[in-house]
Length: 345
Ligand code: NAP
Ligand code: ZN
Image (cartoon, rainbow, N blue to C red; front, side):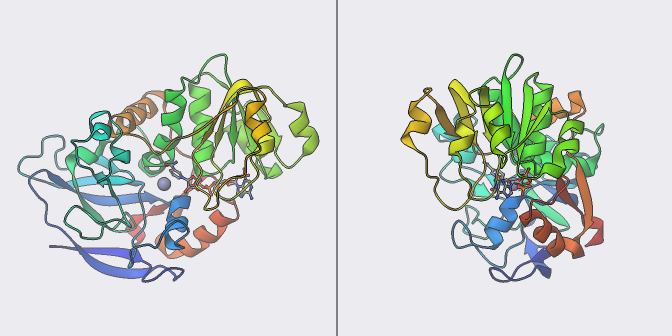
């Protein structure tokens, strides 16, 4: 077994503390990665707090992992020692079902999440707030040497989660896209929306994020709590991408869509929405969701980022400051993704 250092919560709502654990030896099709950086996703908080379902503890969060390959299994072909590599939100799936065959591995009934999950032998998985990880190479992505490595980490979740629906719905030139919430996912949605040629408006509850939104490339900024500003954009958007992590009223946001407009949700607040029947009937509105992305799509997104020089805007933190980062994340106070420098472990 491989001795591993990480940060774990021993039970729900407990603070993260240093924790040593073991990972499996490198199998024939596995690679071992020395983790250099790991992004902090709002999902880490949802999981640590058992907001969706009872979690598996001790929990080592983290599913925005980048680092260097330090060992390659005998039959693994994709990587060599020293290559940069990334791991996202899942590390295995059955490879045989309709979803796996169609590039929707994330929806496979046997999908194994990077942490807070059981692998196919029934062992708990542990995430990227740690110094090393062993993963089947099919679930590991190639990372370009051209991009800043720390700022690449968030692409592994925030990146693909926002890229995937924009590509699926062919959002681009001639479309007006509204991005709800300027956090980790939201700021990536702005960058992708702009790169794909859409006219992008940020809807935010934080008026002080306007200047940043424009620097990120957004064309317009609307304070979603301001009724006058909301009235001015009524019935004018083709697409909305909602990235908000907490329960909020989406009816006034649906109202900014024009006829046949599409409301795409990627946020995962714990409570169900209340949607007025009139909100969707008037204007034939479409409400849909999007979960992460497939393996092929994630690599495509990483290659797109290398080509267009897209990375995340990050605040690099010491792992000892993780609790402060969680607190700020919960207040919507992040510019725009915390990334842990794993050399501080
Ligand atoms: P985040 O960085 O915390 O961003 C969420 C943003 O929501 C905040 O920055 C804030 O933006 C806005 N917000 C906060 N409180 C609000 C309120 N009361 N009303 C309206 N807006 C509010 O979180 P994240 O890491 O981007 O994750 C966002 C959500 O996506 C989480 O629920 C996460 O679990 C989920 N997620 C889903 C997938 C998927 O596969 N679909 C993948 C990853 C994450 P403003 O200050 O601009 O309002
Ligand atoms: Zn995530």
